[in-house]
Length: 109
Image: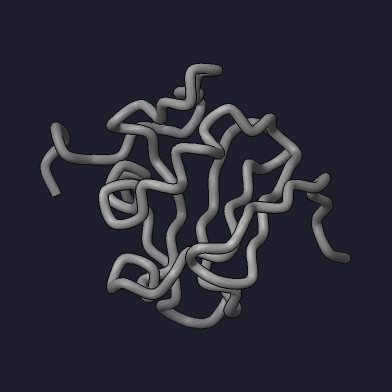
């Protein structure tokens, strides 16, 4: 991947107008990029990262890839609703068309 197409560190923040910068990086489950519904979106507490999963185990070998969050938004435009979500929060939903439920995020011990 050449330098021009690499995801930028996610310290590039989303803005309150619900717009993710096109080059904002995220850790995304490969299944979501392949079309599975995004069921969990996390803005990590340090403000330095976003994660998008299908509700499965993102720690499974080869489950995730670093990419631009815009690729997921192109597949599922409903994610723009979460662009202004503050660091330290997670949004969950039960199905693709379901409402997002936002709560505080804490790392599991």
